[in-house]
Amino acid sequence: MPRNIIDVTDLTVEEIDGLIATAEDILQNPAKYQDACAHKQLATLFFEPSTRTRLSFESAMLALGGSVLGFSEAASSSTAKGETVGDTVHTVSCYADIIAMRHPKEGAPFAAAQFSEVPIINAGDGGHNHPTQTLTDLLTIHREKGRLSGFTIGFCGDLKFGRTVHSLVNALSRYKDIRFVLVSPAELKLPRYVKEEALKKRGIPYRQTDSLDAVMSDLDILYMTRVQKERFFNEEDYLRLKDSYILTPEKLEDAKPDLSILHPLPRVNEIAVAVDKDPRAAYWKQVKNGKFIRMALILKLLDIRV
Ligand code: CP
Image 1 (cartoon, helix red, strand yellow):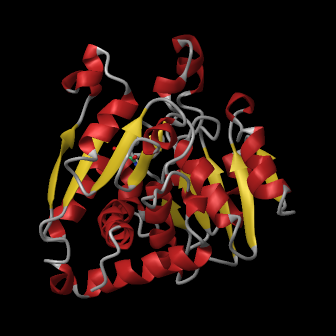
Image 2: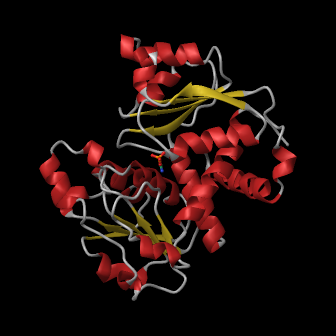
């Protein structure tokens, strides 16, 4: 049975720390890894749009000396002719050594994995989870703060549909002494099941508010998110909520000097471009980190030691 990564909790904390250590080693010694995946193939099956996740997976495999195949939209696969996702994944697992899959339906990568002969990585399933974005976020926090414990993190924006938030809350709830601040409009609060499973079950306290200004000075990390237009049932609600929070240089006047600002991207309007020049903006470094942590994950799932 291949090892799949459907949820970030499919990895133990020790395994995540190991992936971060490998990614750091790759960053320092890229040449050591350049042929590690020679003759191995990664398939990227993207049934939903992506820039960073798909291309960082592909860039990661190429940097490891492997090759890539796949599709970037459902319309160019035989699912458009009525083939089930299970049959598509079964087929691709006959050609590739490992598969990264994104799908708009929650649970689709889990269901597809039952039909695969090779490891499946969930590259984002609907409004549910995005475990490799979380690994990217953890590597970024580790590089910015030097640790994965003992800080206050604010999640701001669409906490209801933001799958990166669900996965990161889940992952960080397993580390020590982390204080969670959840900033959203009432309609876009973190789902109850995430609060129950990640926070309440572990007795982790959290604050909920609709005011970013009120909590800004308390934060060590600010994780901004986009309002997820594609998950809304009506445009009117989206238009009313889309600009709930817009981070500007003025809004950061009360923030700590060593705040780290993260965003999984894409951004729409929630971080002004002027913030990019602020040394506390870590989101473009986060984009780069995504390639290196995915290199580490591919090596782990293919059981390749360098
Ligand atoms: N962060 C992220 O998942 O970006 P893409 O949708 O561009 O892959």
